[in-house]
Length: 542
Image 1 (spheres, one colour):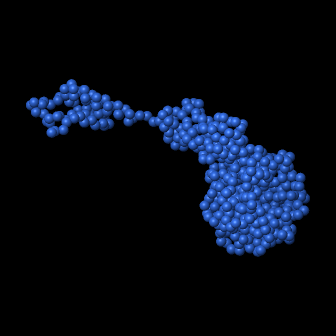
Image 2 (cartoon, one colour; image 1 turned 30 degrees about the vertical axis):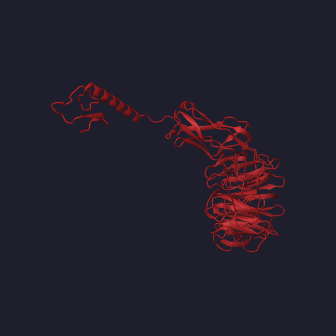
Image 3 (spheres, rainbow, N blue to C red; image 1 turned 120 degrees about the vertical axis):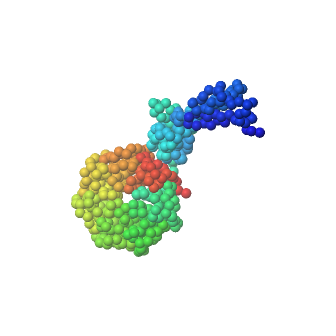
């Protein structure tokens, strides 16, 4: 039997409709349909049919036109916000992990993937009276605004967050589920050493942990994979101190028995192992020396004080930072001059400083900006006395500056001062010690790359000054300061360490906090990438 029915074809010019006869081609008893059906969009073949067939055709045509209308619906419009990754419980001053995510949705709850709307987080319920910190306004990417470094500074249960867009957008805000902030009252670190792109610390019991960049094996865990949480240094050694020179990709630790071990990059012999082979695990510094102090510099050198007070250095010596005439050496060599020291600090730009038992300061190496503190800018590979006749109890060498504390806690700094890293309210270099402004007295001081940090003697409060491009002052902004500025959060610390573009400190209870650059995960807070202008809690080592 011949086929019959209506065929509907949709095209750019409208709906095309054709009818197939029940009985085939026209015959004298079945004349050609010639009229009675209106033209649609000027493109429908004009055919005639009985009224019953006409009704069917009109119904089919209506369905086709409605379908066309649905196919050309407009783009989704942003109407509301929704938390698609809710804030999780965490510790005070610690980034909320995983990162909070807020999605831009249309009125039906579908993601608006084309949206780049600016979304702002604020506190909803605030039972602890806390301050919300981090990047609080971000642009949505693919319709999702992500907040990876949000923290609160006070403990309480039942916090909530509110996500909003500008009122002019007409987008409805959203409120998160509630979450809790727990106080950090204890930890397991005795010390932490910040440097360039990796960080190391000593845990209770003497085991060493490192985190951050590991491309050269500088984390000492037998691998070359970066990590954003503390990973144990292999070998089972028990350390009393640790020091990192991560811009040159190595670190060294001093065991409780006074033996020195180093690991990582070894292009100039900075591991002190007697060769130039890299090592992803600790190797003993040769010479059978027993050290009482040890320091690693980002100038590619390591130096230590042996029993009796003699200083030895090894590694790169391009600026005289080893205190000898050697170009470089893979074994410890004595610092010239025959002086006896009690403490030593290897700097980041080719200089080293040390203190005698009487508190006299001596420096050697690169002096282009007056970092040796002897009133000149002449470099030397022999220790020279720091000018001024001051006596100090501690000293720290940084990039092209150094600072030291007197017995009373008064801080003095000298060298480069481009960004206010001398802390005296100016940006003028000084080749002799200049008092740090603010009338604060410090119990500890540490100098990084064009910034410094100290701990107030009476309270343990941290203050930093100098360059702050990536938040290394920890004051909540990226504004530099030529005088000491209080660290955000008001946490009391027992020790502090300033690195290349980050810093870390440890509380009396052993909790470690870091701030500043986090490009390689060197802040130890489970995140890789992004900066923290306020302290974030380092993950407790396991």
